[in-house]
Length: 428
Image (cartoon, rainbow, N blue to C red; front, side, top):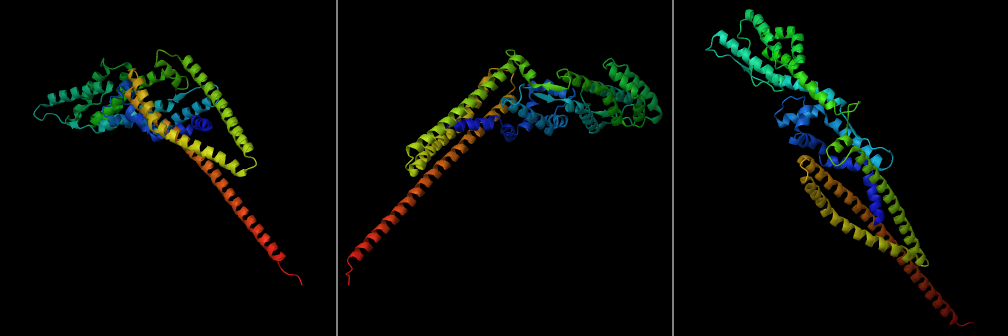
């Protein structure tokens, strides 16, 4: 049984596929988007990832997050770290370095968010002026709405309505634009980058305004005043990365708790790795020695009798296999759930751990436990099959020996009868 456990632990603990298949089974990659990133505790991080642009809809947050960090990219990053972790645990590498490369997501933030803002502006309805008001009041109302839209965009919010420009006579639009752009550039609510961007795009803005294209006008304004928000969000993310734009996962884990440091985490990981390798190697040597020694002992005890040389080990393997299988099934039905409950209770004591992380970790632990014990159960079945095969082989040998004995006994009886008959025949 010990050998079964050691083999199962080594085949699972050091296998990247064991973890990646369990993660896929729990749909963990999609749950990171659907549950973790939208958790209120991660609201600040998600907001930075979305370029400080206000996205209200849960569906839109998930869709944008998948464009900025594509699912296949996320999957590859996680699998790379799992591979490095198993190599570390197996002693193939000396240092445990786990990183999440943020270079591609950072490059995606601006184009993805600009496309999102453009799409939302295109989908916003145009507000027509009050037909009962005179042209001056209609124009004042339009300028007010455009200024409000500019302020909202500079704060990462999308305008809820867009005023029409087409009611303004074409000859008046140029002078009206000059007045409007002067208000924009002189606005104290904008930083220097936004004002400079508006000046740089002034000719393009004038063309859209004079043509009466309010949506096109606001899309250029959005690019000018919202881009600094995205740049600031990206800069804040970069401030937590290394020179290669990678997020150090061990450092993040250490900062999440006041009781540990990065050095202590690495020391604990190395000690755990060394202890696992040492005890597994020792357990494997002891179990192999016991297995080989007991097999040789049984063989020597029943050496004159090949039937018992097969049957006794077969019975032993069968009984051990049955007991192991029953034990594993009992553990498999109860232990993973109990372990999941322990995680939930431990997390309840720490309000810093988001519920989405707890639920995902619990489901993964339960899956790991079920797959782990399932491996022991399959090996126990193999043990039962080997034991049963040895018993059947001993029965076949016994049956063959019995037939041979019957044949020999029959031949002897026939031979004896033949000799008796020959001795009674009279001689001439």
